[in-house]
Image (cartoon, rainbow, N blue to C red; front, side, top):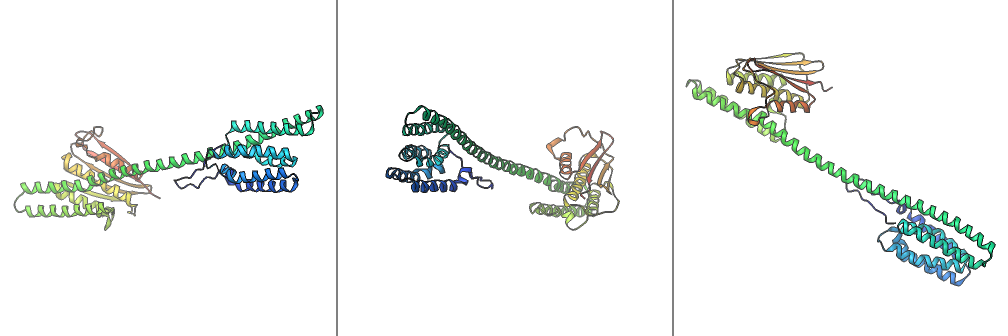
Length: 393
């Protein structure tokens, strides 16, 4: 029976076939029985046949038992079977070699041919024994019973060997399939990681660079219609915003903490956002911080800051509000952020125009850290965005 030697490319250990694992023991058994038969056999013909069997085993048997080629097994049995039967016919002690030949049959060819060869070997040995003892009725009956018992034992032993080999093959195939599946999952995971990273970068660009450019445009548009005396101040603010945008871009490329959090706390970063909104749009804006501020995981602080940034940008660009309130609350079970305005409001069930990330980006960012975003808004009555982030402890 052809075996399968599996090598796991995904890092699993090589799977050794049961027969291969204990092949040295079978070689030792063959050598031991050969020596014992040579010692006990006195017939020169038997010794010649035994020597020929040993040479045949060295030429074809070793290769057949390793299952290197499909032809080695049949070639080995084509010589070993008649040599063993001839050895038994020359000297009864030659029957010892049958104890190793039967397992070889089942290890080197498939089940159906092995059954046929086993039946033929038992039949040939029984015929030799009957001829040697004479055709007496009593002896004939005895040899037939022994033949039946030998046949049953040989077949049971062979089927047991075949089962071990089949289980080993199946185990090797399953491990190979597992390795292939794991490699496939790793590839899918890599692709998913690439898509997630692309989405993250898109949202980072939307939440930082795009909003920064919007602020610059708003300041420059305000400068066009402002009094000449205030133009330098507005242009200076636009220049400062552009610098901050450049810092955001560099931080994004370098995968660093956002600039607003790298040198300051979250409440201070929110204060800067609120002050910027007041300067850029003339909104009446306030920030309230309740509870005792504490350090949060970077991902949590980034989500809170970006949500506030997105909400304030939406207020400036779309709401027409005159007032906006930002509240940051440190609670025992987590942290919450509230951004509320008195603008024209909107229907949160309707998708945003222009394909922007907006609320979708807020919710996706919150989901990644185990938080939730709720929006209370309706046309004509303003909007409230609330982000709740659970405590990481």
